[in-house]
Length: 128
Image (cartoon, rainbow, N blue to C red):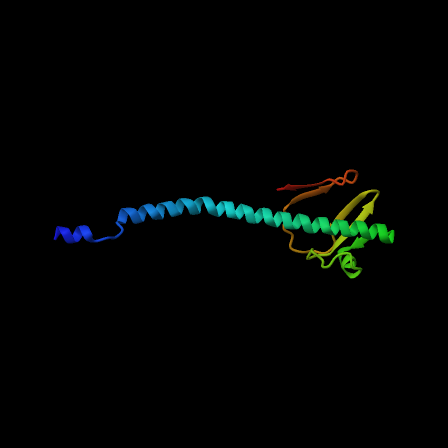
């Protein structure tokens, strides 16, 4: 009878619990890391969309000699392929500073403050 028990192969309860604990530790580390990656990607996408919109407004202002333009007009005139903002945005230029202002109420997801230095053109995104 002892011979038959020695030949049986299987996983003990202790081994199974050890594997479950290790998987739990890995999950506890991985989930916040993945969540942070997703948030950073969303932030990067929002920054890129805003950069594209500001550049389109800059081109419009230089071509049309205007001082204000909406995102819808930028799409209509071919400066943007699509309006990245759910609500309309009004771009205004004064000197070498472009200001973007929402013109319609929408669901706003605050991601931080985006500042463009009008002299150097350097953009800074400060997450909340």
